[in-house]
Length: 288
Image (cartoon, rainbow, N blue to C red):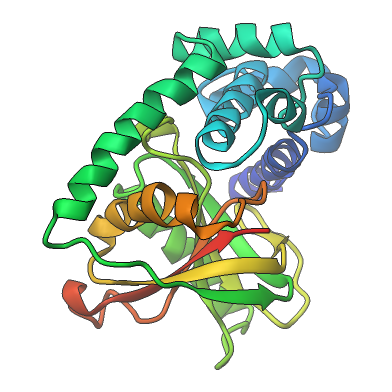
Protein backbone atom coordinates (compact mmCIF):
# COMPACT_ATOMS: atom_id res chain seq x y z
CA UNK A 1 0.00 0.00 0.00
CA UNK A 2 1.48 3.36 -1.03
CA UNK A 3 1.45 6.63 0.94
CA UNK A 4 -1.58 8.08 -0.88
CA UNK A 5 -3.67 4.94 -0.32
CA UNK A 6 -2.79 4.95 3.38
CA UNK A 7 -3.75 8.62 3.68
CA UNK A 8 -7.08 7.96 1.96
CA UNK A 9 -7.88 5.14 4.38
CA UNK A 10 -7.07 7.41 7.33
CA UNK A 11 -9.42 10.10 5.98
CA UNK A 12 -12.24 7.58 5.50
CA UNK A 13 -11.89 6.29 9.05
CA UNK A 14 -11.71 9.74 10.62
CA UNK A 15 -14.70 11.00 8.60
CA UNK A 16 -16.71 8.02 9.81
CA UNK A 17 -16.05 8.96 13.44
CA UNK A 18 -16.77 12.68 12.96
CA UNK A 19 -20.01 11.95 11.08
CA UNK A 20 -21.13 9.63 13.87
CA UNK A 21 -20.39 12.23 16.55
CA UNK A 22 -22.17 15.03 14.67
CA UNK A 23 -25.34 12.96 14.22
CA UNK A 24 -25.49 11.47 17.75
CA UNK A 25 -25.02 14.49 20.00
CA UNK A 26 -28.00 13.47 22.14
CA UNK A 27 -26.43 10.11 23.00
CA UNK A 28 -23.72 9.08 25.43
CA UNK A 29 -20.37 8.95 23.65
CA UNK A 30 -18.28 5.86 24.37
CA UNK A 31 -14.74 6.68 23.26
CA UNK A 32 -13.86 2.99 23.05
CA UNK A 33 -16.79 2.45 20.68
CA UNK A 34 -15.65 5.41 18.56
CA UNK A 35 -12.21 3.83 18.44
CA UNK A 36 -13.81 0.62 17.13
CA UNK A 37 -15.66 2.58 14.43
CA UNK A 38 -12.37 4.06 13.26
CA UNK A 39 -10.56 0.70 13.19
CA UNK A 40 -7.60 2.39 14.89
CA UNK A 41 -6.11 0.91 18.04
CA UNK A 42 -7.27 2.79 21.19
CA UNK A 43 -3.69 3.86 21.90
CA UNK A 44 -3.20 5.57 18.54
CA UNK A 45 -6.83 6.61 18.00
CA UNK A 46 -6.79 9.65 20.28
CA UNK A 47 -3.49 10.95 18.90
CA UNK A 48 -4.65 10.60 15.29
CA UNK A 49 -7.96 12.36 15.98
CA UNK A 50 -6.22 15.17 17.88
CA UNK A 51 -3.85 15.73 14.95
CA UNK A 52 -6.81 15.93 12.56
CA UNK A 53 -9.05 18.17 14.72
CA UNK A 54 -6.36 20.23 16.48
CA UNK A 55 -8.12 19.34 19.74
CA UNK A 56 -8.88 16.15 21.63
CA UNK A 57 -11.97 14.19 20.64
CA UNK A 58 -13.44 14.76 24.10
CA UNK A 59 -12.96 18.53 23.76
CA UNK A 60 -14.46 18.44 20.27
CA UNK A 61 -17.57 16.60 21.48
CA UNK A 62 -18.15 19.03 24.36
CA UNK A 63 -17.57 22.07 22.15
CA UNK A 64 -19.93 20.91 19.40
CA UNK A 65 -22.58 20.05 21.99
CA UNK A 66 -22.32 23.47 23.64
CA UNK A 67 -22.33 25.39 20.35
CA UNK A 68 -25.32 23.38 19.14
CA UNK A 69 -27.05 24.12 22.44
CA UNK A 70 -26.32 27.84 22.06
CA UNK A 71 -27.93 27.91 18.61
CA UNK A 72 -30.99 26.02 19.88
CA UNK A 73 -31.34 28.39 22.84
CA UNK A 74 -31.21 31.41 20.55
CA UNK A 75 -33.26 30.23 17.60
CA UNK A 76 -35.57 27.39 18.70
CA UNK A 77 -38.50 27.47 21.09
CA UNK A 78 -37.16 24.86 23.52
CA UNK A 79 -36.90 24.99 27.29
CA UNK A 80 -33.30 24.92 28.48
CA UNK A 81 -33.89 21.47 30.01
CA UNK A 82 -35.02 20.23 26.57
CA UNK A 83 -31.92 21.69 24.94
CA UNK A 84 -29.74 19.89 27.49
CA UNK A 85 -31.31 16.55 26.54
CA UNK A 86 -30.87 17.22 22.83
CA UNK A 87 -27.11 17.60 23.30
CA UNK A 88 -26.65 14.60 25.58
CA UNK A 89 -27.04 16.02 29.10
CA UNK A 90 -29.74 14.47 31.30
CA UNK A 91 -28.51 16.28 34.43
CA UNK A 92 -29.26 20.05 34.15
CA UNK A 93 -26.51 21.07 36.57
CA UNK A 94 -23.89 19.29 34.44
CA UNK A 95 -25.19 21.03 31.32
CA UNK A 96 -25.20 24.44 33.01
CA UNK A 97 -21.63 23.95 34.23
CA UNK A 98 -20.36 22.92 30.78
CA UNK A 99 -22.24 25.78 29.10
CA UNK A 100 -20.90 28.39 31.51
CA UNK A 101 -17.37 27.10 31.02
CA UNK A 102 -17.72 27.50 27.23
CA UNK A 103 -19.55 30.86 27.09
CA UNK A 104 -18.83 32.48 30.46
CA UNK A 105 -22.46 32.68 31.56
CA UNK A 106 -25.37 30.29 32.30
CA UNK A 107 -27.79 29.39 29.47
CA UNK A 108 -30.61 31.62 30.75
CA UNK A 109 -28.34 34.67 30.89
CA UNK A 110 -26.89 33.86 27.46
CA UNK A 111 -30.37 33.90 25.95
CA UNK A 112 -31.35 37.12 27.71
CA UNK A 113 -28.22 38.92 26.50
CA UNK A 114 -28.83 37.91 22.91
CA UNK A 115 -32.55 38.72 23.07
CA UNK A 116 -31.70 42.27 24.11
CA UNK A 117 -29.13 42.54 21.31
CA UNK A 118 -31.61 41.09 18.80
CA UNK A 119 -34.15 43.77 19.70
CA UNK A 120 -31.55 46.43 18.93
CA UNK A 121 -30.60 44.73 15.65
CA UNK A 122 -34.25 44.28 14.70
CA UNK A 123 -34.98 47.99 15.17
CA UNK A 124 -31.91 48.78 13.06
CA UNK A 125 -33.16 46.49 10.31
CA UNK A 126 -36.64 48.00 10.30
CA UNK A 127 -35.25 51.49 9.76
CA UNK A 128 -32.67 50.42 7.19
CA UNK A 129 -33.37 51.29 3.56
CA UNK A 130 -32.24 47.76 2.66
CA UNK A 131 -34.76 46.11 4.96
CA UNK A 132 -37.37 44.08 3.13
CA UNK A 133 -40.15 41.72 4.11
CA UNK A 134 -38.91 38.14 3.87
CA UNK A 135 -41.36 35.86 2.10
CA UNK A 136 -40.21 32.24 2.01
CA UNK A 137 -41.76 29.37 0.13
CA UNK A 138 -42.72 26.45 2.39
CA UNK A 139 -41.65 23.13 0.86
CA UNK A 140 -41.84 19.51 1.97
CA UNK A 141 -38.78 17.68 0.68
CA UNK A 142 -37.86 14.07 0.20
CA UNK A 143 -34.46 13.02 1.60
CA UNK A 144 -31.54 13.97 -0.65
CA UNK A 145 -28.64 11.57 -1.16
CA UNK A 146 -25.36 13.45 -1.54
CA UNK A 147 -21.64 13.01 -1.80
CA UNK A 148 -19.78 15.49 0.37
CA UNK A 149 -16.47 16.60 1.78
CA UNK A 150 -15.94 18.81 4.81
CA UNK A 151 -13.70 21.80 5.34
CA UNK A 152 -12.87 23.25 8.74
CA UNK A 153 -12.06 26.94 8.91
CA UNK A 154 -13.39 30.35 7.94
CA UNK A 155 -16.39 30.03 5.61
CA UNK A 156 -14.82 32.70 3.40
CA UNK A 157 -11.40 31.02 3.35
CA UNK A 158 -9.73 28.91 0.70
CA UNK A 159 -10.71 25.68 2.51
CA UNK A 160 -14.25 26.05 1.18
CA UNK A 161 -13.15 26.37 -2.45
CA UNK A 162 -10.75 23.44 -2.03
CA UNK A 163 -13.63 21.34 -0.67
CA UNK A 164 -15.62 22.11 -3.82
CA UNK A 165 -12.64 21.19 -5.99
CA UNK A 166 -12.39 17.81 -4.21
CA UNK A 167 -16.05 16.88 -4.42
CA UNK A 168 -16.39 18.01 -8.06
CA UNK A 169 -13.28 16.08 -9.08
CA UNK A 170 -14.73 12.96 -7.44
CA UNK A 171 -18.11 13.43 -9.15
CA UNK A 172 -16.41 13.89 -12.51
CA UNK A 173 -14.20 10.83 -12.05
CA UNK A 174 -17.14 8.65 -10.97
CA UNK A 175 -19.39 10.03 -13.74
CA UNK A 176 -21.99 11.26 -11.26
CA UNK A 177 -22.83 14.50 -13.04
CA UNK A 178 -26.20 14.79 -14.76
CA UNK A 179 -28.86 17.40 -15.31
CA UNK A 180 -30.48 16.78 -11.91
CA UNK A 181 -27.45 17.47 -9.71
CA UNK A 182 -27.83 20.09 -6.99
CA UNK A 183 -24.83 21.87 -5.49
CA UNK A 184 -25.48 22.17 -1.77
CA UNK A 185 -23.56 23.81 1.06
CA UNK A 186 -24.14 22.94 4.71
CA UNK A 187 -22.79 25.44 7.23
CA UNK A 188 -22.93 23.54 10.51
CA UNK A 189 -21.86 26.37 12.80
CA UNK A 190 -22.91 29.92 13.61
CA UNK A 191 -19.98 32.34 13.06
CA UNK A 192 -21.32 34.43 15.96
CA UNK A 193 -20.81 31.45 18.29
CA UNK A 194 -17.99 29.32 16.84
CA UNK A 195 -14.42 30.55 16.30
CA UNK A 196 -13.73 31.08 12.59
CA UNK A 197 -10.93 28.49 12.43
CA UNK A 198 -13.32 25.79 13.73
CA UNK A 199 -16.32 26.41 11.46
CA UNK A 200 -17.53 23.25 9.71
CA UNK A 201 -18.76 23.36 6.11
CA UNK A 202 -19.89 20.49 3.88
CA UNK A 203 -19.62 20.87 0.10
CA UNK A 204 -22.26 18.48 -1.28
CA UNK A 205 -23.51 17.30 -4.67
CA UNK A 206 -26.81 15.44 -4.91
CA UNK A 207 -26.62 12.08 -6.68
CA UNK A 208 -29.01 9.46 -8.02
CA UNK A 209 -26.48 6.62 -8.36
CA UNK A 210 -24.99 4.44 -5.64
CA UNK A 211 -21.36 5.17 -4.84
CA UNK A 212 -18.98 4.18 -2.06
CA UNK A 213 -17.17 6.72 0.15
CA UNK A 214 -13.54 7.27 -0.73
CA UNK A 215 -10.78 9.13 1.14
CA UNK A 216 -12.17 12.58 2.07
CA UNK A 217 -15.42 12.04 0.14
CA UNK A 218 -18.36 10.70 2.15
CA UNK A 219 -21.91 9.72 1.28
CA UNK A 220 -24.90 10.74 3.38
CA UNK A 221 -28.56 11.72 3.25
CA UNK A 222 -29.91 15.21 3.89
CA UNK A 223 -33.09 14.74 5.89
CA UNK A 224 -36.38 15.53 4.21
CA UNK A 225 -39.44 17.19 5.74
CA UNK A 226 -40.70 20.75 5.92
CA UNK A 227 -38.41 23.67 5.07
CA UNK A 228 -38.83 27.42 4.70
CA UNK A 229 -36.98 28.35 1.50
CA UNK A 230 -35.60 31.86 1.04
CA UNK A 231 -34.04 33.24 -2.13
CA UNK A 232 -30.80 35.13 -1.54
CA UNK A 233 -29.79 37.35 -4.44
CA UNK A 234 -26.24 38.63 -4.61
CA UNK A 235 -22.79 37.89 -3.30
CA UNK A 236 -22.10 35.00 -0.94
CA UNK A 237 -20.30 37.59 1.20
CA UNK A 238 -23.73 38.87 2.26
CA UNK A 239 -25.16 35.53 3.44
CA UNK A 240 -24.85 36.58 7.06
CA UNK A 241 -27.21 39.53 6.53
CA UNK A 242 -29.88 37.24 5.11
CA UNK A 243 -29.46 34.67 7.88
CA UNK A 244 -29.69 37.39 10.53
CA UNK A 245 -32.89 38.70 8.95
CA UNK A 246 -34.35 35.18 8.88
CA UNK A 247 -33.56 34.38 12.50
CA UNK A 248 -34.14 37.81 14.03
CA UNK A 249 -37.00 39.11 11.89
CA UNK A 250 -38.88 36.36 10.07
CA UNK A 251 -38.68 33.44 12.53
CA UNK A 252 -40.08 35.15 15.67
CA UNK A 253 -43.10 36.37 13.67
CA UNK A 254 -43.64 33.24 11.55
CA UNK A 255 -45.32 30.89 14.03
CA UNK A 256 -42.90 28.13 12.99
CA UNK A 257 -40.33 26.38 15.15
CA UNK A 258 -36.95 25.04 14.08
CA UNK A 259 -36.08 21.37 13.79
CA UNK A 260 -32.78 20.26 15.26
CA UNK A 261 -31.08 20.03 11.86
CA UNK A 262 -28.61 22.26 10.03
CA UNK A 263 -29.92 24.59 7.36
CA UNK A 264 -28.43 24.29 3.89
CA UNK A 265 -27.90 26.33 0.75
CA UNK A 266 -28.58 25.34 -2.86
CA UNK A 267 -26.48 27.31 -5.34
CA UNK A 268 -28.54 28.03 -8.45
CA UNK A 269 -25.74 29.40 -10.64
CA UNK A 270 -21.97 29.17 -10.81
CA UNK A 271 -19.76 31.85 -9.22
CA UNK A 272 -17.08 31.18 -11.88
CA UNK A 273 -19.51 32.25 -14.63
CA UNK A 274 -21.72 34.76 -12.79
CA UNK A 275 -21.09 38.25 -11.43
CA UNK A 276 -21.43 38.36 -7.62
CA UNK A 277 -24.47 40.65 -7.76
CA UNK A 278 -26.27 38.16 -10.04
CA UNK A 279 -25.73 35.05 -7.92
CA UNK A 280 -28.86 33.26 -6.71
CA UNK A 281 -28.97 30.92 -3.73
CA UNK A 282 -31.85 29.14 -2.03
CA UNK A 283 -31.52 28.95 1.76
CA UNK A 284 -33.39 26.04 3.36
CA UNK A 285 -34.41 26.42 7.01
CA UNK A 286 -35.76 23.20 8.66
CA UNK A 287 -39.07 23.95 10.39
CA UNK A 288 -41.99 22.23 12.05
